[in-house]
Amino acid sequence: MDVDILTVLVVDDSPIIVKKLTVLLQTFGYKVVQTASNGKEAVAAYKQHQPDVVTMDITMPEMDGIEATQEIIGEFPDAKIVMITSHGQENMVLDALKAGAKGYVLKPFQQQKVYETIQKTCKRKIELQFC
Amino acid sequence: MPARKLIAKVMQSVMTRTHAYFESEFDIKLTEHSCAHGRFENMTLLDTTAVIHVGGLINLLIAFSFESSLLNVIFEKMTEELEIELHEIGIYREAAASDVINTIVGHCTIDLLHIDKNGVAITPPTILDSNHAKKASHIKDAMFYTVSLNTTLGKMNISLVAQSEMLENNFNE
View 1: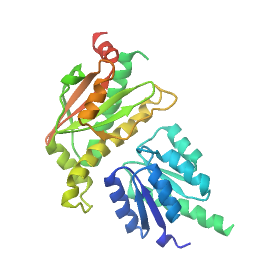
View 2 (view 1 turned 60 degrees about the vertical axis):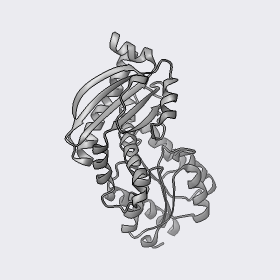
View 3 (view 1 turned 90 degrees about the vertical axis):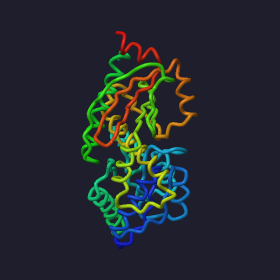
């Protein structure tokens, strides 16, 4: 897998965060295939595009990011989901990891942290593919 | 935890996180100007107000109310590298207010976890309109506690809205 053409689904109810992340991910050379503003849209978008990585907010209307992660992982166990959220509670981090998230970035996010977390998540994918 | 202590802990956490966030993200220094409390219907709202409901044992509304001049600067800083169409500006200004409260209250949940061991649940932020105002007034005898903050760019108010016994205890004990 070439990390330069990673496909990404961006999920956040804030249009500013969606736009910021989209611009940032494009500067990394990734392709944002779709954006979603709640968990329900995220599940539908994942089924349609099956991107390499999902960036997922937690607190959203309709369906939150933890529930959406559970649904996606339930159907696609190899899905790579990175939480990008302002929730810093330890139990929320654990809930996200239990739901199947592979990484966690606290808002306001630092560009380098987003890059490193996605790279780490994708490297895991490469390693698994060659195992 | 007594209601008085709970309100004080929540406001202390919100204020600490707000000062830190404004300085690090926007290079804006806040100074505390005044405090007020009373019945919800008498609460002063500035030009744009974003609210989050904190659930569980804490169970109150947190409102961040901004003067337009201050929100304009926040909006400009948050979107300085983004292309925003003219017709989108209103939506993005409100999103800026929502992002500020969402980030700050999200960070506060770390401080407040010891109050509610089951975890502090928060709703997505919403912009306060007459429907929300009506909903808040249905909190049993809703009352508010506001801290007004000054900056060189404009004012903002941070308010907690809760049942009267929580806030009255806070001021009468």
